[in-house]
Structure formats: C-alpha cells, structure tokens
Amino acid sequence: MKERILNYRKSMDALLEDPDPNADWEQIMKSHLNQVAFFQHERLIHLIVTALVAILMVMCFAVAVISQQMVMFLLVFGLLVLLVPYLGHYYLLENEVQKMYGQYDKIEELLKRR
Image (cartoon, rainbow, N blue to C red; front, side, top):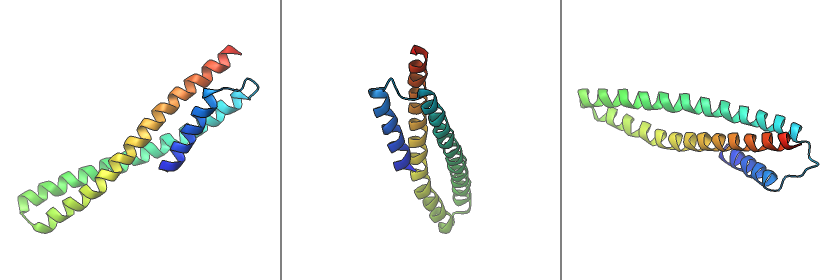
C-alpha cells in the first residue's frame, strides 16, 4: 500500500506540475476522487486497527503491572512491536491523503480557468 499511494501521489504531482490544457480534467478529477476515497477507506481501517492495538497494549500493561507476571510484560512488548509500524503506516496514509486534498484543489482551479 505504501508504494501504491506514493506512486499515485507522485504521478498526480507530475501531472499537475505541467498541466496539459487538452487533457480531460473532469475525468481526471473523477478518477482522483475515486482514488482518494480508496485511500480514505484504507486510512480509516488502519486507524481502527491502530487504536485497538494501542488500547489492548495499555490494558495488558495495566494487567502486567498489577499481576507482575513476566508473560504479560512479554505480551506488552509484542504489542508495542506491532504498534510502532502501525503508527508509521497510519502517519503515511494520513499525510498522503492530506496532500491529495491539495491536488484536488489544484484540479478544481484548473477546471475553473476553463
């Protein structure tokens, strides 16, 4: 997913850097909105998964502190190892979708100039 979202955003940046006046910008906008919707859905799913893993980790940490069982501390560590990449991936999705909103605004400006 990381490679797909980065490649898509870069291709749109290249398209908007030197806009072709003969391009079908209405179709490009529809396609762009479709892609943004896909990435928004992906972002929502990763937000839910990340939040659930974080909540589970905090709950396991509380149980580990209360019970003083080493197995629980290992579980907390394992969840932390999962949480860090989840946070990184969610951060990427969030920032790239925000950049796509800016691309949408540029396409809208190009359509208004016509």
